[in-house]
Image (cartoon, rainbow, N blue to C red):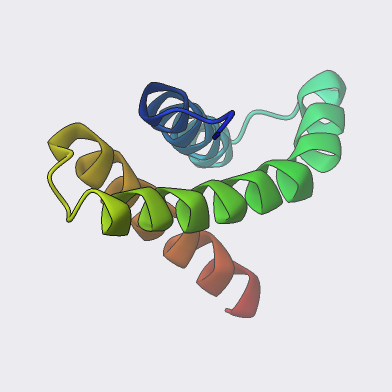
Length: 92
């Protein structure tokens, strides 16, 4: 029995992607508030780990359903793209 449903995975994938998109927009707008900086430092790595585990679980669910869940496939591709850009932003 799985405690994480397809709908839950879609929501988690979208929320983590929105979080990192918000971080990018804060960086782009050059916002320099201390409270925002604290939340960025506290939440970035845990959210990145959560996103990686959700991507792995989403791939497992997609494999079991033979890639028939269209919305889950779209949110997984979006989360993988976001995770790809985040990991490579640490490198460069």
